[in-house]
Length: 102
Image (tube, rainbow, N blue to C red; front, side, top):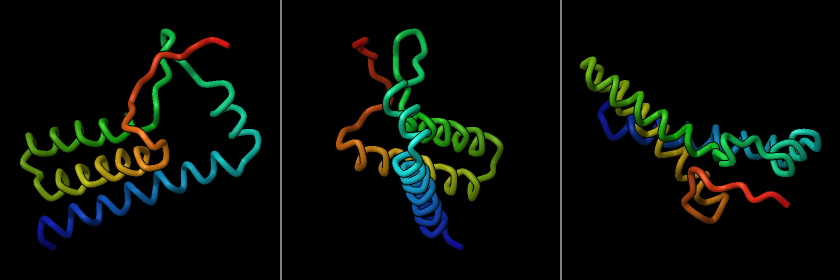
């Protein structure tokens, strides 16, 4: 497999995993209430699941440093896929935002 195929496969996996995660959250009433109504906050900030995409990108850098180029490209594609799907579903590019108490 060439590098473009690795990246596109990772992109597809990242998009599908995020889409499935969001589908489960939106269709399960208990999870929907917990995730959308009672956000888990860290020091008053809500961390969105697009942060997992950043974690995938950091792991891909570690793979590059360990001379594992194919794994790095696949993991980077997954990270971009997670971020892309979250951006499309949220209709904005967001990783962390300040939680406002109601």
